[in-house]
Image (cartoon, rainbow over the protein chains, first blue to last red):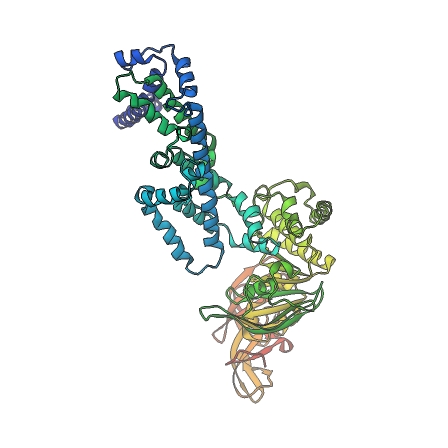
Length: 293
Length: 346
């Protein structure tokens, strides 16, 4: 073999296909990143500058001020809906929503898989078809029930009506069905009753699955907009996603909209889901692909 | 420790399939009984009914002197070792072994002491903090044994515990299980489809076929006096030779005008002879052509046909044979005769 052919192997020829691949990826990345960077830029300038010049390439010095007003300054009449209060409300909603869905889904799946129920398959499909009936379809009756139970403007009212979950039930059912039968039998001989088996064996085995569900459900709950808007009327109960909307409402009046504050709030609203995904990422992949049994 | 008694135990599944026909046998205190048979013969179903994992359709099961038909598995005073070990993957070896005791509300200090004793007995002391995924197949099997031993049960149940191990390890664990059972003196029921395991481990073997008992007996009885052609062909490797022949005037005439006396009615008959009960030599009276010689080191197996029927002969390593015509003779004392129609021994 001569030197020239070896060189040809080392220096891979430029293929236009690859260039195109990268171009698509780079464009996609920019498409996702630029709005975020614009939000970031807006949080560092005064609202006056933003309305005069629009988004700029200059990084201003208003980051601290905007942060402080976003977090601690109330935007409504009551003075209760500060950023920090809304953040707490959103966290309660996100975590309560996720944990509630996991708990209910796991228990429903446990009943469906491990107990000899009449019509278990039918019950499962009944649960499964609720996927076709999202909240929006049943929002009026749901609201009426919540209202009659006196759950308006409470965390219970915010979380509980959303909890029943076909998705979580479905994933846990598939997971439980893959747990070997012998494990159940060994536990029976070891004297573990249904509750003990669930807590001692099944819950620890489902760790990765629970983590995966937690990510999906937390982000889903965090982003809820319609239901919180219906159920909470007191400003102290507002969630972040809803609060941002209120800040930009000024646009309709003659005031200068609080761009910096609203965008800062948007930034804060993005952070927790991002952190949850980063923290649980490895679990997430494991939970959905690997079976650690 | 206890004796076990099964009286007319039957298993019918809801779809009408009868997995076990009414079956009765007793197991003496401290006895090691092996249930053996091909897959689908009902041996596992029988074991699982004894364990309480499967409902008994009919019949009476007692462990000790107690009728346990409707007793929960946990309260039957049994321990079971599963084929796939069934260890709890998220628990350490220590917790795996102690879990059954913990559920029985035994004091933590006592559990620890018992786990230590069991771990020492099974050479697991160094692995107590490990998870099952960090152990080899043999070690996992020992943990499963430990989980059974630590409970100090009246009855051990083994469901094909060695079938996931490689051949060498299987041989070693076979001896370990047998030695442990001897030492503890616990009554045991062991299910396997491997006739070598059955022969080597059992005090008594129960051969099952299609949900019914073919024969109960010591390994020697099963091997030398099989009750049916099924047992004869299932037990032993290579299996017993079964030759179709005709009986007339209390004699069975084979090729070469050799006669074997048979206390049977005239008509077709099946003659069974173990490969090692056939002699090879110049002075022998039956001409035979060897087609294939299997060299196994310690001995050789000769395959060929006699009267158009397959015949296998087992010869020692010092008998030099190659493919071709030889002369053989059958040891008449070792011959077992079977009814040609029912397959039962005469």
